[in-house]
Length: 131
Ligand SMILES: [Zn+2]
Image (cartoon, rainbow, N blue to C red; front, side, top):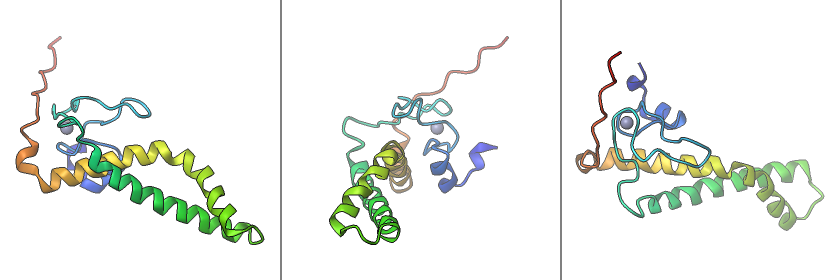
């Protein structure tokens, strides 16, 4: 059962912070407005994901430093400034993942620290139609 997933596994699988079951994203960068499983409004208010920017900065820094270190080992004769510049090339391929995971980490952090106000933004999921 998906709802028994741990929070970290739910983040990795890009699931809802409330039920840990519903998929958050519909496309590469598009999100559901409400969780398809529990009805939670994912963008609680306008500007809600501003906090995810800080997580995005941290993830970007970690990735760029990691890519720069790998490139410094692979290209020992290239100047440091160029290696850092080259590190942005593989990072650009990671931008959609950084976007998604920064929002997911922020939503799960918000859920775990503000769970009492989190459930106010909720739309009941209609029951499945009977055949
Ligand atoms: Zn949900």
